[in-house]
Image (cartoon, rainbow, N blue to C red):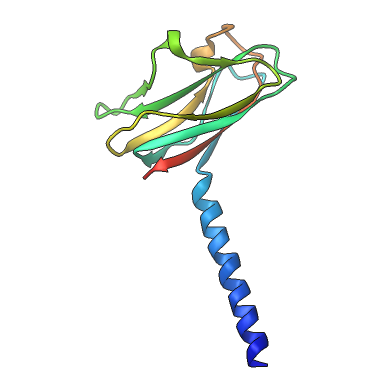
Amino acid sequence: MKKKIAIILMGLMIVSQSAVANAASKDTDAILKASDPWANGGRVLCRQIATYGKVSSASIKSVAWVMEYKGSDAQWHYQTPSNKWKRFSPGTSVPTLTGKMYSQCYQRLQLNPEGSGDSGKGGIATGHVNVVVK
C-alpha cells in the first residue's frame, strides 16, 4: 500500500512539474485573420523573446513577422527597421526567430505591421512568443 501511494505521489509530482514547464514556455500568441490588417501578440515582461509560427496556406498574401518592445516613453517600437522585416509566404512554417536583448521591458510579436507588405487585409497567420531571458 505504501509503495502504491509513493508511486501515485511521484506521478503527481511529475505531472505538476511538466505542467509548470509547459505554462512557462508558451507565453502569448498573435493571430492574424483575413479580415485584420495586422495582429498583435500579448505583451510579456522579459529581456528577450523568440517567435515562431505559420502562415496559413489560405492566406492571400505574405505576412511580415516583427518583434516589438515598449520603450521608456511607453510607446511600442519595432526591433528592426521596416526594410529588414522578415516576410513569409502563404503555407510557410516560420522558424524560431530570436529578438534583440533589452533591459527588462514589455515585448510582443506583431504580424503584418500596419498592413504593410501587401498593404491591407487578407493575411492569415498564427505566431507564438516564448520568453528566452526573463
